[in-house]
Amino acid sequence: MTRVWIAVLVVATMNAMIKALGPIVLGARAVPARVSTVLALLPVVLFTALVVVDSVTEGRELIVDARLAGLAAAAIALALRASTVLVVIVAVGATAAVRQLSG
Amino acid sequence: MSSAVLGVPSSAGAYGIGLEQAPEALAPLAQFPHFNVGLALSEAADCLGVLLAGCARTCGGSGDRGQSNQRSCAPLRTAAGGRDCSCLAGVMNRPSRSREPGIREVLPLLLPIVLLGLSFAVVARAAGWSSLLTVTTSALVFSASAQFTLVSLMSGGATMFSTVASAGMVNLRFLAMGIAAAPSFPSGLVRRAALAQTINDASWGLAHQGGGRFDIRVLVHSTWPQYPAWIGGTLLGLLLPEVEAQTLGLDAVFPAFFLALLVGEVRGRRSIAVCLTAAAVTAITVPFTPVGTPVLLACVAALMWSGGSPA
Image (cartoon, rainbow over all chains, first blue to last red; front, side, top):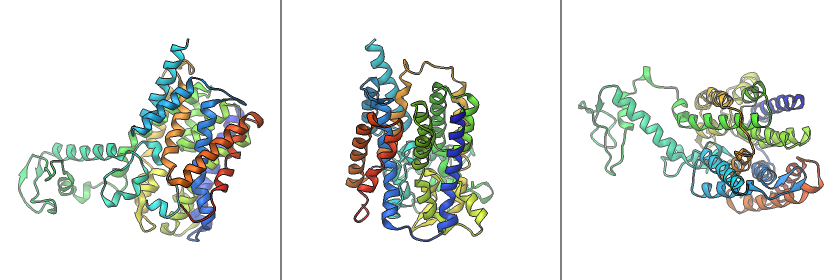
């Protein structure tokens, strides 16, 4: 657990620094277009990677299990423009249901 | 929308709030997927406030801002048949009772924030985090995406470096937001650094006035109410009984949540290409690298597709 505490503190500090960096150091200087584009694409990359890791992997193995059902349910809910909280609830419900049904 | 013009991303879709047909002034919120609920709540709150105040003034027409002296208790109905309480609210809004700009706008977001905090606490507890750790994380990090990333990777056995780097990178968009908002900041290093801490998806989007200008008061006043909501939600989640994570399907919270965030970020063919590349890189490298590393390696997808003119 100590490592988790350390990670939390490091992330909190990084967060504060990331937010302050723009106004302090860069002011109104323009960011190069390429850098700006990469920054804008990073969330896409990270969220995609996290979706993959959290739905079809277990440690270093690729595994298909009930979580995939949850992901599918989430995708449907999102397509139907449900709010994020509802999407999460639907996904959890679908996963639990599949686990119950498959014993 | 405007944030795309500035080249800045916003994954505020996390709050499940978005905008479909909204007044021009709210256009920066277009990156929020479902604002109609928020708008409706906000209007309902306004109407209720006016009615509770005992009376309502009717206005001559949609352009009339309460110059008539008629008193009636019926909310105004627009020609289209919908409710228009803005006229009434404007009339009832005497200066001494007017709220700080920003608070009103963020009000509809507070309930989703509470619920999100609650779900964070639930998954953190399921991962074995102590109550103290959970609340402290919410208090210090104050970012749903970073916190969920932390829990997900740490409990999955990722290395410290991967976890911290991923959680940090997830929030790199705040760097771009800070750069965009900086010209509107007052001078003074300490003040600018402190003000910058109020930047998050919701407040940044709400503070954007168009043309690269930001209303600092909105930035500040739409952030601080989120804090008690976030901590409160976390505490509420801690009050819930301990649950058996697997049987209840709680591990599905992560892919669902990140998928929701992802959907809010994907705009246009370039981001779709990035998404598919990142998914492929991640899936391929999982069996061959330490836990957590695939998430970092996937960033090569952003570099691959960043050439050429901005999307």
